[in-house]
Length: 389
Image 1 (spheres, one colour):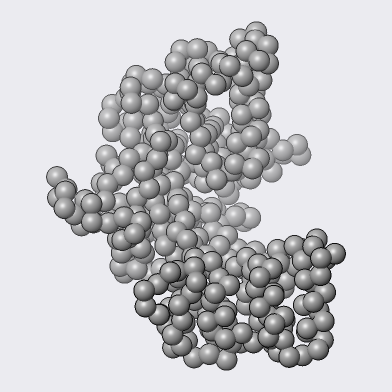
Image 2 (image 1 turned 30 degrees about the vertical axis):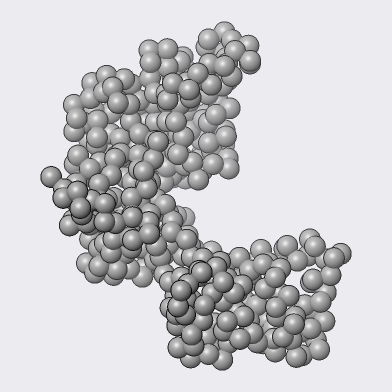
């Protein structure tokens, strides 16, 4: 049993320095994606988690980006600064502020105003004034969208702010939350994550997702170098193990459902499990394929419906598979099944919600208003839960 004194020692305000003990690529060669299975050891932390919870991770910025900013500021990194956003009681070194305390992306209009005030080159000053002009609002929005702070220093070298002026424009580097992809019943001293590694280009520069590449590239295996905390969630499998589960989790949205199935198998839950999974290509992007096949063979996963959007001319998504199986999905709901969605909030979760309403209306012979009421009741009863981002 965990020591209660230890159990409360670590939190968002005092994260535990954990170790990555496994970091492997889930996609096969030829995939357009980079999805990793990352295992983080929490032994000795007293941290506990439930299926459905998230792990908070505090990342660090890339050393190369920090070095370029220091060079362009003409700074050593040892300068003492007190960034406005951090509300510190004592100054810290500029290098520490840029490495682990402040976000280096998403510059604001205010950052350009600071540069304009410092500009010594007439051409640079004119360009900054043009961007800041009231009639240039759309141009400014587009300009800032494609740039990070290092770009501003590179494009306006004659407008060099002091280290303090510079850090005062930066936001706090916030922790990222990742849905836990394991059950503590099976892995009490580990937390598994399913990580989409973000890499892209804007303004001719290679960009990265700060936390995804921190975990994938920069945090060494086996070293206590990853500050983490557990974020409690409302999202979780049915308390009553006899209840059925319908789980919609394309891409990395699969993470909590791996935890759900592990948990339900470990606790001997008798309810059926139906999983909808989607990604780009079956041959390269079927995350945890072997595990799902084993669950199917053992009867621990009742149904698995997949949608691989790029494997045919017309794209197929999880909501399309839902509609194809509308009659059975409705029968499960009428039998008391819980319905879960995890993944992209902008499109997928909305499309799944529309499909659910359509299925309820069609199969229940309801009006749109009645279908809406039915879905509202599912939510009220905790039978329709979403973990979307």
